[in-house]
Length: 167
Image 1: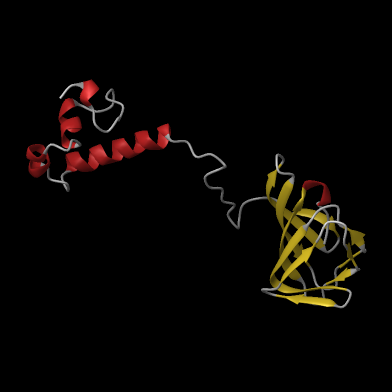
Image 2: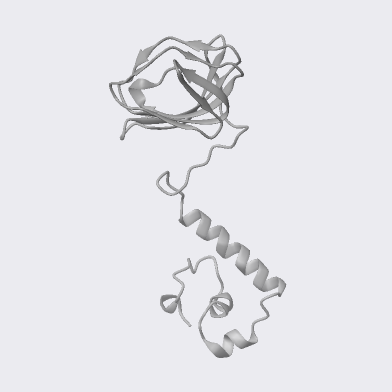
């Protein structure tokens, strides 16, 4: 087998001819390969390492924010915000709000749609009372009455970049 016959399109500078044959579809070679051998394990490791280098992840594929990663910004004396993701092209931001018991926020109008999911605790907007698992949409142009949390809350918010604020 020569380099231009490489059926897997793997960088041949990294693999020997023998290793390339091990990866081939040639039945006579495949039958003789011990898939649990140290040589095969080493080969598998090197191939995967090269694939990781050649296939960089883009934000369009996957994006993860771990619970212990990121900074909590103090918005008021009883409200903190952790930005998860901002998509400037779409003008959308996602973040968490950690609200302490007794926190309040002034009435405000929404300059973009705001999606809110209560993860834990409670939050009230006037006579609208939300609890863990509740979803709330404040459409662009709508008004929120004064917000209040009796027991504290953790909220997931997705809204327009220009709308990023407290509750």
